[in-house]
Length: 596
Image (tube, rainbow, N blue to C red):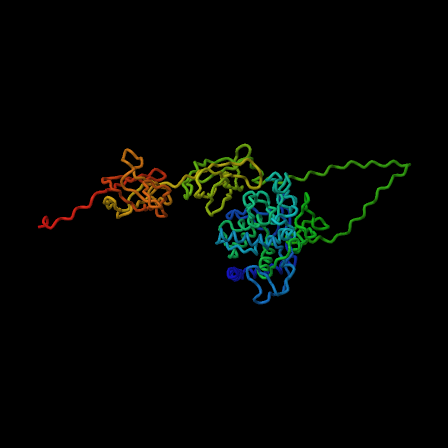
């Protein structure tokens, strides 16, 4: 473990330089101001557009606010030889309080990273990245206020994503996770929005549930989320893509990178509930370090002037202005003079409604001519799912994102190994899912197509995985198979299975010594196999071809019956081969007199 992280630290040297620059940039609080675009969504000069090639659908958090505090610039260095390298523990040295991570939360980060590394070793996910994101998103679950199972003692909720200074994401979970049936809100210690949790959620603690409020579940989900699309987080470019897909802000990227490098050098466990509590947030609000808001709405202006907050912390600088005059208190009118009725005023003009986005115009999704979805176990599906986005009157809608989610008891995945994929509709309104790859589990499963960003009628596709099959069987050699009564056949039967000319690997097969070509029932005399106890067996089941499509049967033996016998081999898919076996006495040796 220590060797692994030592190697990872060397790989991250370039990232350290980026993080060092981030400290200076963020400490200076010179981030550009935030504006609100025509659709009511928050934007910034350094915001990053979602990358349609990576499928990053905005962000895991809906670009919700995050904590902007940075680690101290000058922290005591560990005493040589006292750090285990993997944990970052600085035993024997002064331990900076900012490096403390609550014990249960730290355990969740490490276990999640270990599981992801086992499942996706090419991703090179360090637990310190999960810790950095957990610190920035929720202050490690409000300083570790979790129960023994890792579930937060009270919900951690971000602001309503109602387009009022934040992204506009209408309710996708009927309030199940965030308690809001009108708009979505980021949920839990890793701040997933419900629409992302629906496909990214994981059961990290093995209790059978996927709970965004549980730090084990949330950390594992975050790890898999960061490792999708084949990203290798030991490469700076992929590391940046992964972090930006979590929250689409350059300031967020720099903040997370700074904590990532800090935790690589400084980290130690502290008791649950005693972790350091952040307070400054990217929306300009401050708090007592209790995590994201739990109220119905946590948006504030972030400054006395009412100007929007900066994404990297602090507020936009207001222009100097004269203080407002104090309001004149109401006084009763003199009794001799009636109170004048205020003159009618013209009603304020209505604020123009924001222009609808393409997503706002989608009424439903339709199948776009997808054929039958059937594949043999282990094979790729020849047909790809096509879904069309349409308006209420049936017109196609381009440039919207469709998410495809595999559900049901199946190990089928999309190309790349994920159970979720996304595609953008073209000018004809059609989005095409990546190639489906069948697993080993046979039967039906469902692929659900849903619109990203709005709840509309989606489409369910039924896909079927059939068992591996062969259509042809041939012997690998044509030597006659003969034996003397009571003896052992010298050669073992070996066959090759193919399907449409290709190797048919791992195909189920059965071998039976039959009575005749017309009577496939098991013969009760003649050649036989032996079971583990040495008893005669004339039918073998649970056979399977190897990766090269070959099947080699056990040795055959003969009883005292002579004659020609038949061995029939059949496979899933209907391939059949009948092999002749001959049992006859050995030729008598010629006598000397006969030889003369």
